[in-house]
Length: 113
Image 1 (cartoon, rainbow, N blue to C red):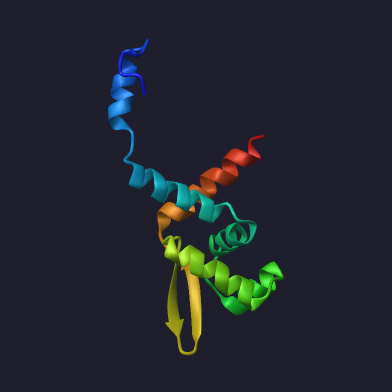
Image 2 (image 1 turned 90 degrees about the vertical axis):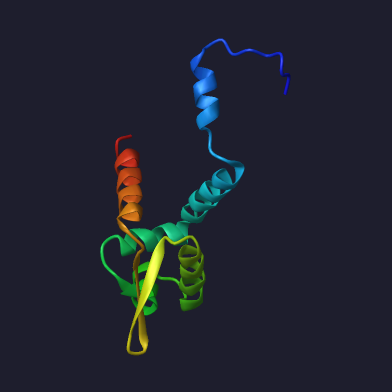
């Protein structure tokens, strides 16, 4: 970048100082990419209503257990869902209220159109 270049707006320097690190940008990008898959998003929307096991999600979404399990693995890796075991059954739910808020705000925004 040309170091002689000067911004027209003095607020540009303030914003430039507040930009996230490359690592944080990469993590945020991966977060949105994870949510950007139809299967994973449908799982998140389902879990926004209640906790479910893989069998329930298979029924709700009409997908194979393998597809649901694979998607849940990606969602867990990004800390979007968590699990708990009850006997032989593992139940999945949204990881925390932040995920609920993000989903609710995104759906509200889309419905505004």
